[in-house]
Image (cartoon, rainbow, N blue to C red):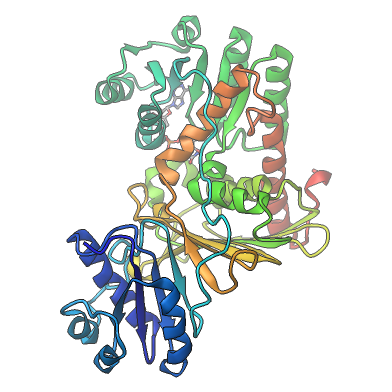
Length: 480
Ligand SMILES: NC(=O)c1ccc[n+]([C@@H]2O[C@H](COP(=O)([O-])OP(=O)(O)OC[C@H]3O[C@@H](n4cnc5c(N)ncnc54)[C@H](O)[C@@H]3O)[C@@H](O)[C@H]2O)c1
């Protein structure tokens, strides 16, 4: 096996289709154990730069080269058998769909310039680690046994080794089924039973209109609280929840978990280390097919997309930048024939002081299949950019694999680095929110990061977006 070698994909006209096919073949070789999973991969375009290219290769020796044009075989390097013929075949239907092309789950660098610039200089590894509490055995009781608890809360807690002691749902059969599925000992008959239990943390995942009644009772019982987003559907109710919780002095957070997804943590790390320079743009470009029928009570409401989906991006933007926007401008609509009381297609522009902007463009009705869907999250700064593709949204809630890459002029201009980020948005980010409540119980500074008071900032942006949609004017969130 050619472990620890450099792999170069090159050719006269390295179209993105060729590049994808080459990476697909490479991934096949990796699965077959022909090449090591750790091999860095380089792609180089343009025969005209051959001299520079081979000069650069000397530095990377030993090298495996996947040549796209057979005549380049003479120039040295290996052609992995069968590659050239395979690369010439017409693209398979759906060849670019997520999951088939899995270049380098491990760290690698892909070049799109005409010549190899060389490997990154300096520490290119990125941290996407979730800060964990000292103890993981705090007893947790869950309220709500719906789709998000089954799809994300419980898989995350199982992965993290958290201690769920019981579950309650007003539909007892759902609580029983979830308890059986995840081996939870106790099914409570009422919220009173939850509050009388030895649970230290009450984890609430029910429709937002139920949050006030439950949160105030948890606060009176003196237990820590994790409340699903949105905290409330209006600022007045949210303010009342914050007041009740602060008066009781409990540790409480909103389950605004997207800021703990691996890509967001990695971007935070890059920003903190100055590898992207001064940030001037954060962008979420989403065009997917969302199974809205999972949540009939959301679709029937007056506020749909921003309140229940883009709220994640708005909170993540706040977490990344550590700043509040001065103005919010938004537009929202749905598609012809879709029965909803609110919006399912939105555009939101956040205007910060100076040149900093954040943009969310979000559409949930893509009927073109996975081949046409995208869920791109970008951060751009004066020293570099980072780009993530959020696989979760393309086949929700199962998802397809994520991808992440970044380029920093401080490391090597033009060299894109794709570190291997452990985990994925679902379920891993849910470890982040619950861990932050536990760290809050341990007195960790700044924990929980998505405290109820912090979350008022996110909810203010959501409400400013709705005000802007009706007024067609930019709205200052602080004015609400
Ligand atoms: N953070 C995220 O990524 C994320 C993702 C999806 C949903 N959510 C949020 O989670 C919450 C639940 O969503 P879901 O998809 O699981 O919905 P769901 O409709 O599948 O489940 C909701 C459950 O809550 C129960 N319930 C309702 N009122 C109750 C009450 N007063 N006491 C006890 N049980 C009650 C219902 O019987 C139902 O089983 C929503 O607020 C939603 O916004 C968050």
